[in-house]
Every structure is written in C-alpha cells, then in structure tokens.
Image (cartoon, rainbow over all chains, first blue to last red; front, side, top):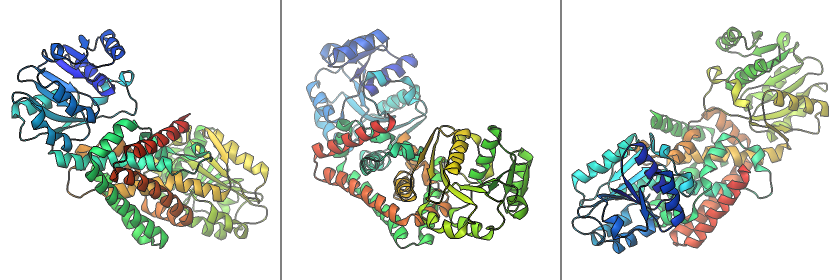
Amino acid sequence: MIGIVGLGVIGGSYAMALKAAGLGPVAGMDVDRAALDQALAMGIIQQGGRPDKALLGQCHLVIIALYPALVPGFLAEHRDHFRENCLITDATGVKYQLSLKLEGLLRPDVDFVMGHPMAGREKMGLAFASAQVFQGANYILVPTPRNREENLRRVEALARALGFASVRRVDPQTHDQLIAYTSQLPHAMAVALMNSDRPGRETGRFIGDSYRDLTRIARINDKLWAELFLENKEALLEAMDRFTQQLALIRQAVAQEDEAALRDLMRKSTRRREALDS
Amino acid sequence: MIGIVGLGVIGGSYAMALKAAGLGPVAGMDVDRAALDQALAMGIIQQGGRPDKALLGQCHLVIIALYPALVPGFLAEHRDHFRENCLITDATGVKYQLSLKLEGLLRPDVDFVMGHPMAGREKMGLAFASAQVFQGANYILVPTPRNREENLRRVEALARALGFASVRRVDPQTHDQLIAYTSQLPHAMAVALMNSDRPGRETGRFIGDSYRDLTRIARINDKLWAELFLENKEALLEAMDRFTQQLALIRQAVAQEDEAALRDLMRKSTRRREALDS
C-alpha cells in the first residue's frame, strides 16, 4: 500500500498519477472528510481516513503532501505508527531546515527521502489536481547522509514512473539556494509588480503576453508561500539582493542614458536565456 | 494602396494580417532587398522597393514599422513624398517624445495617428512574422489634438479588421506611463533575473513554469529595447522605483520574519491579479 498524506492539489495529483501509472493501491489520509470521500468516489484512493496507525501501518511507502510547517509535527506524532522499514518522501519546496530536524524525528528503521516535484499550481485543493502536471516536469531528489541508496533509487524510479522527465540529486542547501532563485524570487517579483501598479487605471486594457505571463503567479497561496519564504529566509534574501543589484544596473544605465551599457546587459540576459533552452 | 514601411517581424505581420483580412493591395518598403523579394514571393505585398516618392505617392494609408529612433528621420526625409491627405500610422512602443516632434515633421494635409499593437515578438525579422499575433490582442490608439476624428476611426477600424479584440484611446503621456509599467518594467525584471543567476550551476534542471514564463522575454532585441527604454526614461525610472519599493517591503517582511505582513502583501497581489482576469 502507498500512503498519501494530504489530499490537496499536490497529494491529489500524486494519487491521480499513481493510478494512471498503474501503481497502488493507495491509502489517502486527510483530516478533511469531504476530500477523502471525493477521492474515494473518483477511484484515485482505495482506502481513506485520518492518518493513524491502522492506515500508516499498512504503507511501505508514504508520500507526505502537507504544508511545510506541518511536516515535523506529523513525523513526531506518528513516529511509532509507520510500518517497519517504511520509506517516506515529501513534496515540499524547501529542504534545508527540514533536513536538520529529520534525525531526531524518525525511527532508525524508517528512511525519509526528501523530494521536490517542480510542478506547482496556483490553485489549491483536490479539485485542481491533475495527473498531467508531472508530465515532462523536473524532479529534484535531495539526499541526506542518512538515506539508503536503494531508497533514493526507489524514489527516483517513482518520479520517472509518474512522468517526470528529469531527476536531479542535490544537497539540501544547494537545493534551497536554487529554489530561492528559480521559484521564490520570481514569486516575490510577481507580487511586487502587481502591488506596484497605480490604483484606478485600466491596466488590463494595456497589457501584452509578457505582463500576463509574469504576473500569473502573483495569484498566490499566501499561507503556503509565506511559509516557504520564511523557511528559506537566508537564501531568499540573498537571491533578492542579487536581483536588486542587477535591476539597479539597468536603472543606472537608463538614468545615465548609457545605451551601450544597457545593450550589454540585454545581450548578457539573451545569451543566458538561449543557453537555458538549449 | 496601403504602404508598409519596414518588413521586419511587425511590418511582415501587418502584411500577412492585411492579406488575411482581404485588404490591400500593399506596397512593401524596405532597404533590405531580400526581405522585399521574400514578401513578394509570399504574395503578402504586391509592390516592393525602397521608400520613395513613386511608392509613397500611391498610398492613402502608410503603416510605419521601423525602429522608434528612425521614425522622425523617415518623416522628415519623405515629407514631400506622401500622397495628398495621406493617413500615416505607426507601431512603436513609446509615444510621448514622438508626439512632441510630429507637428514640425508633417505637411498640414497629412495626418499621423499613433498606434500601438500590443503584440510583440521575441524574434526579429520577416521569418517570424505571423497574421495570428494580432488575434485577440490589445490595440492602443494614441490621439493628439492634431488628429482628425475620421482618421482615428479609420485606424481603429483597421485594428479591428486585423483581429485586435480591444481598442483603447489614451493620451501619449498616459500611454508611456502604462507601457513603462506593463511592458518595459517586466522586460527589465526578466533581464535582471537572468543576469542575477550564479554562473556555473545547472539552473535549467531546477526550474518550473514560473521561471520559464518570467524569463522568456529576457531573450530580447537589445537595439530595439534600449531605444524604447531611453525614449521613455522618466516613466520607466518611476515604474522601476515603484516596483523596487514593493520588493523592498517583501524583503523587509522576510528579514523580520513578519508572516502577517508577508501574507498581506500576497493577498493584495492575489486580489489585483484576480481583478485583472475578470
């Protein structure tokens, strides 16, 4: 039995993708009875209930899809409920703070392989779950010295079975620095862009694709993202500062009407963006 | 005869969209013989040559699709070549500086209605032109006191015939302030985001859709965008400063671990983004 803890948009997507891949059976665990009933009715879980020893004790693999701040408490509360040699993995977007806490929260026989499916959604809840979101996306495996190699391989194989195109391994600190830059900073930028509009003007009539693309993520789950930002404070502040410095270089070139400097900065970003696609 | 000056990606798209709408014939004007030959071979222009009195003198409507900095010189050079009562329009992304120069550059019988099709492309040249880019996009009409109402209506009707979904009128200064915010600032942000990456790390393996969407426009035509930035210096600097202030509020909330303030900022951006789509 595979357990999924938390039947929100990510947990629900896991349940759907597991079904599509022919894996399971799946036990869905949630405190929200309506989500459980819906998932049962959809046939994407075969058993459902609150997380407890009866359900967790059946699962050789448990996928935790809770808000980041809830994970340590969940592990502590259910320390003795996991099946022997259980493999646990998660889906949260920051890892370093969690990695520091794991040792003290787990039984010696239980392994926790941190994973990050890079397939976020703007919308919350099971209603927006989809088996498709993982197709072709990036998956990051974040090993710690405590992990057993066979379990790292099991989580990697699972990611590939669910449709992820690329699986990379990276240590927790590097993961959080990269995510601060590639995910949290863009969300902060989108929020700031939206909030810096002058109120009262009919902005929506004067936008093209670039503004629409860039602000899509300004519609944000504030509870989740505030947690992610604060869990990754140092790396995020550093990424924000590096970005602000680069923006200041553009500002200076504009203020000084230094066309050559401005074009240099644009050519640099063009080269880097082309390399990203190649 | 409708004249198009400059057969790059925008001029080429106009030629294709005119053909698709059953309008024309079209005279294409460019200094690049290869572009003219290609456009003639594609059947999207019926005559082609360098801009001169022979071609311009036939056109009751001339669409200028040149780089912004070239427009005043083009008008001066060809002042006496336009057909009597010719209607000229353009496609450049900034308007205020141009609006100040028009009076001195035009014959009294010639009307210049400034227009801004909000359908930019990252790629340059006729090869990337498409009749589809205008479909459903926003068109901005930027009247000056010099314009005749009938000509404003002609350009508006043309925009609708070419597929634009929304046509709004706005004065040159307001246009440039809006565009600084909705178009130039996002391009500056994308350039700065790309340039603030740490070199040497495998960033491409750790990105999701948000980073990809946001940096798409970091691949930028540096000659065109440096011109647009510098032509719109004051409005762009103001938009950049307003954005930087909002980003600093997010930074401060993170640094102070002020979750409530952070969530307030995110809820504000969420409300604004939802209003944009509605």
